Image 1 (cartoon, helix red, strand yellow):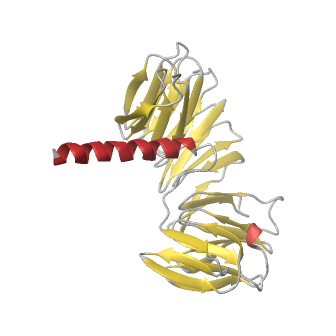
Image 2 (tube, rainbow, N blue to C red):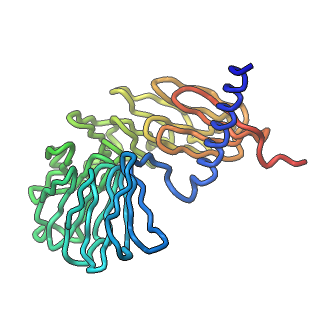
Image 3 (cartoon, helix red, strand yellow):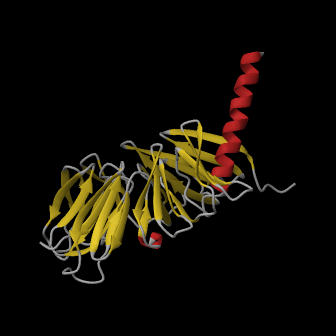
Length: 313
């Protein structure tokens, strides 16, 4: 009896977790974070880290941004500060927090002609941008940063090291948590996941998205849906799907016949012979409402379901 109750309780909690995660997906990206921050009724600024409360400021703060295990903010003197690993440091004495971009592990800023990256209480200047084509841009992921340097190389900062990716002229480039996908002026689609660089297609795609570990989903010039994963290029659909979406390591689509499918870990799964009412992919979780009104989730090749929602009484 106790085992049955335990299973029932676990199922209910799982259902509600998936439901609320799916409910708020359009509003914000659900990501794991190890540090929480809050302001108490006396306007003091606190963080909760590793089971302990730390009061950082006794006066109100502004422009708080949070990564996976760190927080940055502006104090009453408009200094930009970072809390990480139990320590607080000033990273800029001017109110320039809007110039900072925050991800789970890395933080970057483009200030005074320099591109800087911040990680583990360290700051590295990656390049001086004053002599580079303007406006200068870069792409930031959880643990990777990509930019074009003065020597025209597309480069990536990853785990404290700087890597040369390609010297070809770039149309554009995008990052995921740990990979860089890029289009060249030579009309090739490529992906870089340190230290490996792969040419995926010799023609520009109509659409593409980049996942983790070098995974790329794309609609090629013939409107076919393909996925590049584990050093293998695989056709998923010979015609353009009705819709498709991609996360860090899975790709979901509704084919031309309304069949709902998912690619994950080298396998194609048919989830439903009828198109879902709605679906969304966040990281490695696919959530969808099927035609019966059940809220479903697909996680690492496992399908779960909750109670029906939005069903007519």
